[in-house]
Amino acid sequence: MAKLKRDERVCPFCAETIKASAIRCRYCQSDVIPVVEPAPEPEPTAETDPTPETESDDVSEPDTVVEESPAAPAAPSAPKRAVPTVQAAAFFLQERLTLVLAALVVLAAAGVGVAWYQAQQGSSQVAPDGTLVGADARTQVLVAAADLTQRTLSYDYKTLANDMEVARARMTPSFRKEYESTMAQVRANTTKNKIVLEAVVVSSAIIDSTEHKATVLVFVNQTTTAGDGKDKNQQLNRNSLVINLTRAEGEWLMSKLAALG
Amino acid sequence: MTDRKSLINIVLAVLLVALLGWLVLFAVRGDVAAPGSTPAEEQAQVLADIERAARAETLAFLTIDHTKMDELTERVLDGATGSFKKQYQSSLKTLKESATSQESFSTGSVAEIGLSEVDADSASVFVAAGSKVKNKGTKGEVEDRAWRIKLTMAKEDSRWLVSQLEFVG
Image (cartoon, rainbow over the protein chains, first blue to last red):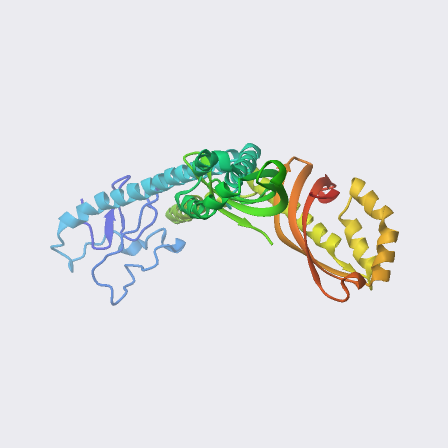
């Protein structure tokens, strides 16, 4: 068998000698990957075609095919034999690359599909912007706001310690401090003047609510009774309050109370 | 053929990058990454629509200018329905007359507005509102008034309208 020339190689499919830059074997018509010689790039020769894609290169020039070249006598045959192996490896890699890419695309598409499905199905209680939309969850906020407002704004001089304890139980630590300092100021007066405060919540309505924080508008009618018997003195205040609630361990706590106007 | 193969690879790679980018969007921004709107998103939109309609109607109701009562009352009627619309319509003549004779001005404002019960086609809204009033009765002085208002909303042809307006005692 004739030795391979510099610009020749063996077809990995039929083992016939073909041009190194060929993209299709002229014997078996298999698609092959062109091998471009890495060595001397500067002067492009007619033999190593830098544009192997051209279809005209499909069939090699017949006059240069089997010519024994004395110019390249001791061309090492080892790397030449390696060419088919390297080429085959590259070929398989490319083949597999497509496969790997296709598999990854399928996986990513499945991931997107799952996330999309969850977005459609899940979390019907909370909108993407955090707004609490679940009807039951919103009702809980309304009820908690009314309940906590009545607890905080109602007390009787006869049961003051107990009433305060009831109110304190559902407050955030910082609001509890505020509440305690306020109550410390009114305590003496409450006992002395026999004051009874009774708050009745007329309505509660959500200004803004997420799962963890809520701002609620509460209309409350507060009756203040001072003294008893003949000296009884009553006063009714109709107030609009803005209540802030914070959820901790599944329970709504009062974190702020402010009167409007 | 090899060309076609590398073209396929490029297309697959681009597709992969796009899908991974979308997944990252899901991870970072949550459900917003899903095209279209989720039921929760739609409900949040409903709540916002109700609030906007209630606010607009409250302001329209509290705004009085004796020089352009026709225009102002038309605006109120546009956002009204049911018994509120009937009531307002029947008192329209008296309202216009008293506004003219009293030379009334009133500017409404909404301090806070909150939603109570919300159903598919009805809702109740509470408003802490105020108005700056000036008329012959106030002797040219501007008086501040505060109101606690309950609005009952009804959905009609995809629009939220006020079907009842009450002052909360």
